[in-house]
Image (cartoon, rainbow, N blue to C red):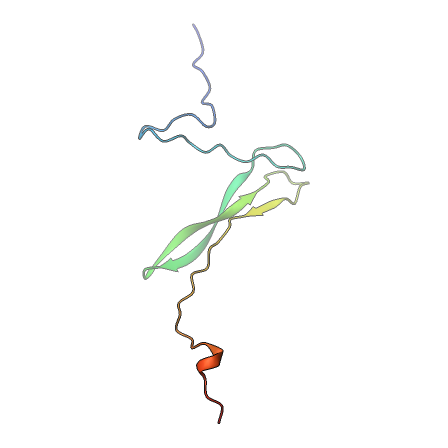
Length: 84
C-alpha cells in the first residue's frame, strides 16, 4: 500500500489562490508558529494575528506583522493656527 503524499507548503488553495508558506526561523531553521492577541473588534473580542514566533524552547526569535497606521486629517496645519 502506498502512503499518501505529505501536504506541501505553498500549494494552491481550493479558491485558486496560492498559499503562503510559513516562514523559517533565521536562527534555528525551524518552521515558525503564528501567534495571536485578543482584541475588541467591532464590539466583539476576537483573536487578531500579531506575528510569528519560533516554537523552539532555546530560541527567542519573533517576527511581528507590519501594521499600517491610518491617520485622519483632523488636526489643523501649524501655519493656520493663530497665536494669542
